[in-house]
Length: 605
Image (cartoon, rainbow, N blue to C red; front, side, top):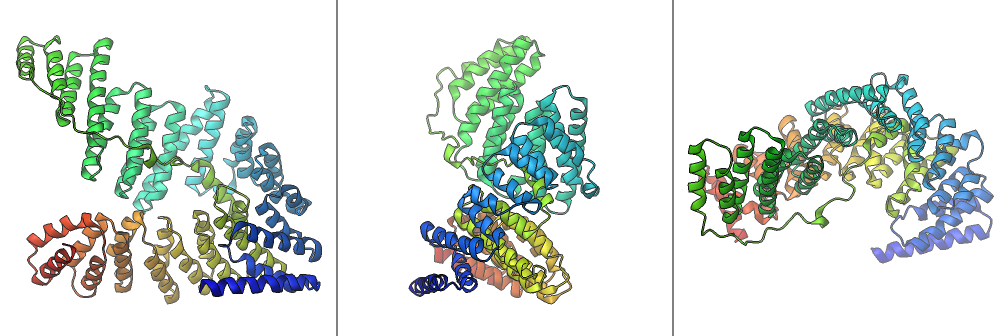
């Protein structure tokens, strides 16, 4: 098949060159468009096709916009700018300056193009805070944001942060940040109530940012602890530990020793529950931090009970890691505190029991750096507003990706195909035709980027059921929790074809943090086909949680769902699920289920 595909590409390329040689440029353009749809080929060959296609558009077909987007992909910036003249090309020229990181030039053109969010973000990047603050302030009164609490919260946050950087004592900045915090807390609650935890997570991350930059430890704690809670629910174990580590580091920097020690212990408990080998290191760090906390209480002249409690907490942690020498030392310190004579005598007696104790030298590995995500915290206070301003326009969204080297070439190429498809449809005055929108929906799915979700959500608003079906079907390639928001909505669509497309998408969405949305759909949607698709996708996740859920269905359901659970369990390939199977095998009273569990265990032995 690969050989046939290669032969087809070579044949198409030869035909395209022949047509150019004959001056048949319109036909050649179609062949080159077919070629650039093969986004998997090597760079030099693909770039050569693009250069030839851009030349056809620019010099022979007088379609400079298409040429400009191709030059943007190739980073031929001067040539790209020439293709977007006048007022109609202002936004595109701004985008080119943005890719070049010429932020001031980009901001000025975005202002001119009436894209105030893009302009304000560019002014921020250019460190022109007064212009940025003015831009955010004007957006606070934007009529299109009147009923959009989340976006209003982001604007208030950005304005408050810009003003605070200009003047630490800014009253308007402080009031705006307080307003932002209030709105974010309210919106986060609403998102969680609707089951959109990933959107609530975004709110908590902004509260976290607010706490970091304002120095308010309460905001910092609220942001981190809520982020950790959501990540735990999604079983994103390494992200959970990263957030714990980052929070502890900040707590220590701010002298919040009690909080840091408590967090170390929480991280240790979590590591034990999830089978990760880092609990001993966290317990040891908790012990050391409790000792520091006790020393701080003494130096601050705090009530002696606080010092006593901190040392007792340290003893508990040292005992957990088998460091009995340290246990004895802390009891000795307790016996020296200004406590009642009876308590001091008791602590001294206990300390004497550890005179000949030893330290457990078992290895205590730390959470390794290579598991930490270097870009775990995105600047969503900008990103989500930029998304709102693009309005789900497929061409604008794809154009924002084309020149951006933060995306891999495969994504940038697919984005370019979306842009050229929309530009071609506009040339033919067919950009609103259902066939065009269906094709664009398919291409957005193939983009496999989070940025594709908002355009697909907009396409789903189409009154044409064929467009809605295509938009929903495209979700099967978009492995993001947000995809399930549209899936759930489309499962209740009045058109049977849209519901069928949702089931198809559901069957394709199996990735690690899809478990909770899939389980929720299984529980709440009373349709056998939907439940079956959700259950099959849960089976493909291959996690312990997925295995336990399938066993629960096997034991509690009858008929089709039990059979689906059986097939999914039979194909599960995760040794960590075996203890769960063994546990339920011992207690199962249903002979059919017990026999099946026994068969799975024998097969795995």
